[in-house]
Length: 117
Image (cartoon, rainbow, N blue to C red; front, top):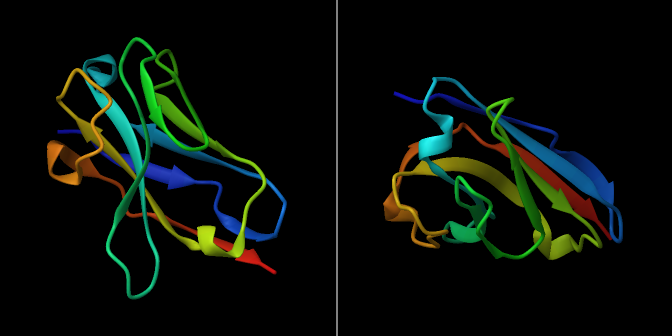
């Protein structure tokens, strides 16, 4: 069982930056590929970025992880109003940076990101 807790969301002006964090519980953090997804009101959840245990990445923005701290990060720069959404952290057993939400078995509660124009 893995518990994920996101933080770092908030309100930012267009063109600004935010760095999201996701802290994971458990001793097997390095065995998971970690991903970020987002969901805007009235839209389906969409893939943002993913990173494998050894740093293989895919997606937009900059994803990174600190295995010693059981934490994954999402650095978002040049934000646009269309980036407004709830951002979710998730963990997958896949060994590749999968973009498929059904590959992720653990999910956080999400953190709201609002980008004003």
